[in-house]
Length: 397
Image: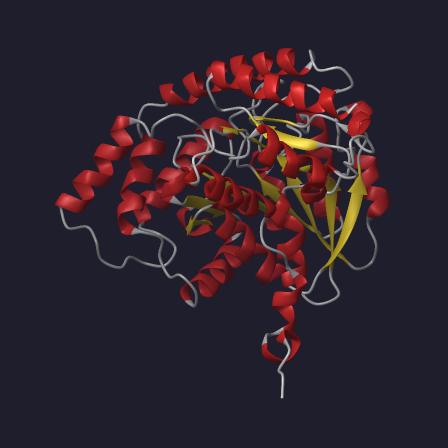
């Protein structure tokens, strides 16, 4: 008797898909192993090396044999460093017991949704969205309420649109600002209105602040800046982009004591503590010199402008101006239906295999006429990659 997958595996695994960005990276790795010369706009990570003082802290931890288990939520010195850095930069007011260190920002997000969202709960999610939001909500049994935004308004998330989307079953709202993939930013005024709205309605506001320091539209703003709403605000942070530490898997959450206690409970039954060595490196990152943060930001801004200039040279391609993060999200709709290309996924696949340019299709982010390009590469790579894209697209016509 043949046993089908549906008879073997739990229903919840069928609610999710493989991360689109990870799938693109895997396919690119195969081609690279075969000798293909790729221009990689797919990876969402800085191209800088981790700063020396952070690496030295990790080496010192290993030499000191700081390699055993720690408390699940992270050592007190690290949680103190998290709350002090956040307080210094954003005026927040969290205690050590209101912070937890996680194995990357994605674990903080995953755990937060698992402890807050139950079957039938609705979660408001603006479009375009980071690829994992939808799947993690569905894995928890929640229902995604997609909130459409306008490309003509730079994908701005409006408080009144969120308010109109709320139903009696709304349990949470997810905001990612600056956003992946479009680089849109929620203004300080709009953020305060959204925080107030969620707080008054007893709705949790999950704020993915992975790119909070890469805000080109003004002074970075955090939902933690409104301590009167702490009961309903969950800050999901990461050291990955801020300090070029993607592979270190260093993330955190800031929230009320009750939320953090439950995050810790869940983490105790999954990964337990994050790497002890990474915890020491994270202290160095958060408490040490912050010059690298401003230097990285300045370089990303320069690369953004260079990428936009090159994209503007491709006929038919339009692109909003990202206000943060390090992605561009060009609209390639003018080329769909040409040369046998029907969808953004097909276009991205052919760009990879024929032009050897790595991109991520917009369907992964909830839109059908875009591709995402990550620009933390050299300007020479931007020039070469966009040249290949232009040649490929024009050949479709």
